[in-house]
Image (tube, rainbow, N blue to C red; front, side, top):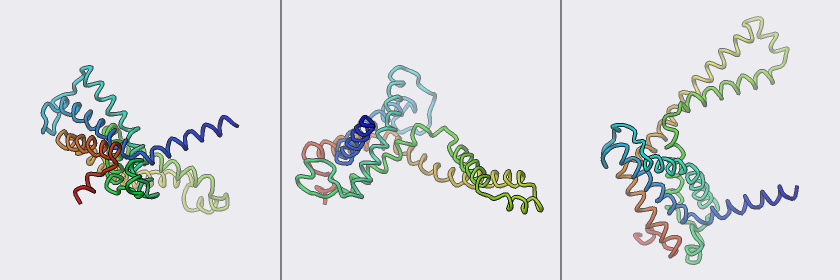
Length: 227
């Protein structure tokens, strides 16, 4: 029990640190964007190209892909840092907090948007909408089977076979949720692909490095200087 308490204390302390260190994660976002730039540049064959001429399987390409996929973890922490910064009004770094006790909203929104894109970049080819639809349909049928009383089942049986009704409900729920998820996920995946396009990845990389260093090292935000 003592070890479990200590375990959760460490986890809580880590996420508290993440919430107070948005500047560091802006800098890490620049590193991930650098891997996007390298991997997508090699895969597409040109800096501005949008189509791939074939998958590059070199060691460098594989390493860049691995680091890019590691961005999923950074993406989750980005979302946490950005969301907690907005909700709790936490400064993005300790040096920034010494100047202003409030969050930098631009940094928080940047982390949330890019963090979401990081989550969806490695899973562009997975049939997520179908998986979500099947899970929703199965969960609905399972819950109905548990909650509907026997008296209601007997009444329903007068009009239609209860098993057939569950199958119909499963198909309908799966189709509706799958279509809704496909649209929502499609939008997020499009944003993810756009953000990893080399010219955009280059901009994010430069911004991540500059903004991260300014926030973490000097307690200054680019947007604050511009305004």
